[in-house]
Length: 294
Ligand SMILES: [Cu+2]
Image 1 (cartoon, protein in one colour):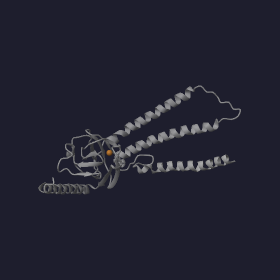
Image 2: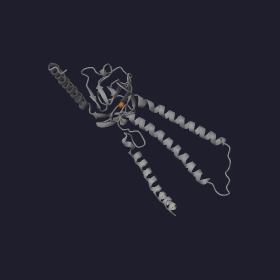
Image 3: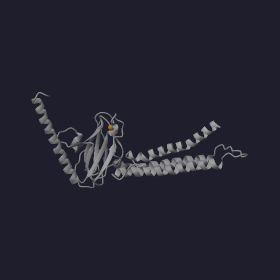
Image 4: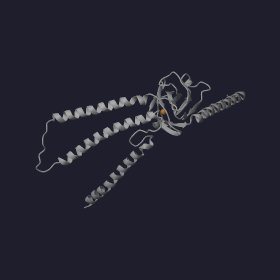
């Protein structure tokens, strides 16, 4: 009797155990949005390019969902309808030209539709629009909105922090004196087309603020570009999306969107803070040199 009893216990435990395992998987899936994305679709709402990526993704997802549900429903129906029964003998079918042509043409048609929709959407994802706010800087590098007016910010990825240098002059020398810069948190004016000129100083990183558009690699010795146009004052969060070393998980980014006038004040403040810190360092260095400690 004993072995039977332990079998029964095992069976009794088996169901709750698999239920617990299934709930663990479900909970981890539900928690996935905290990884800076929505449950099923990419984040949107922060910038027009992010919105276009979101709508393209959603169109493809819906078409894929219809195909998935159709295939799975047919499969489940067939499994039930034609299940093994006593006496019944399975029909042996060798090919069906009509069906085969049907699903080949159908699949090709879906691919053509997806390609056309993608190419129609791509320009609005790649090309930056004009700024909606009156703001004012232009440079000669690509990409550029039609009227050329945008704000250039150089983004430098380094283990394990982002550095931002403000103004088109950063493209010639991101360490040029007097150029305002900040770490981790980027300040931008709302309604202005911001073009990011992205590089890395050590290993490959990846710039990614989901609400403001797709990921862009930051590669040492090479400049990549992306853009966004944030709508209103808001704070957006991002994360380096390329495994870049032990502290990769802590390489976060923040984009603080403010009104153009607040932005100009912030930039002036940044400039003053940097100047103050520089003069403190100069004083300290002079003191250390004088006292023979340097
Ligand atoms: Cu990184």
